[in-house]
Length: 250
Image (cartoon, rainbow, N blue to C red; front, top):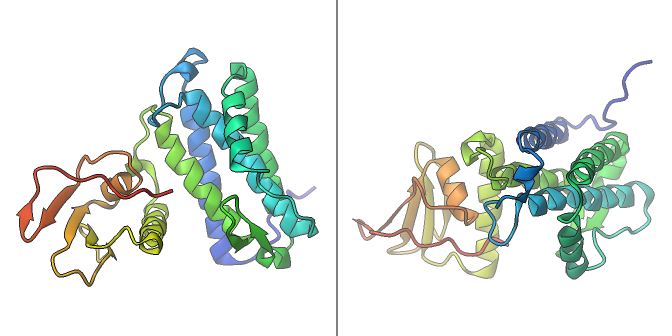
């Protein structure tokens, strides 16, 4: 019997699915390198252990799968009943036994992958709603998952860095973050430049902008609030002694 494959034939969507699946595999590798005792250690996110990160990624897969099911059936199935329910779920998941926590990640990832694989071609354009209330086509679920698995693989605090994340993922992530800043008006006077590229984001019309520059990986790490290493800040031709924190992303 031939293996079942994705029903979509859209090359851009297939490339996105590949990045999401690679990110899931990368997260799985960093998770499997950790012993059961290591799961109790701190992640790179304040207040969260590695258990919290793993639980979040597991329940996130289930939540996104609900959106894919919504797109396929037409029956509304929200990601979560509320953000408080999501937060409670993560806190509960962090108390699971190591084997249960690992199974949560494994099984939820497989379930989401099957939902993506079996979603009919035309259903990818059906509209669903994110937990933030945004109405998006089902194809957006692929990017939603992609950024979660790649960024949180770093947050596991097990040696992964932003340099491990593929450049196309980093570029889109930076574009998303800059877009969120612009929508909130928090990018006023802020200009982001990626060294060695033509990538520029932020307030391009500012007379004397605060210019943040660095490699793509370093700039994205700064933009996500995960460190300032490798990033410089300059204003009016003067390099500042300290790099300011990035505006809130989420």
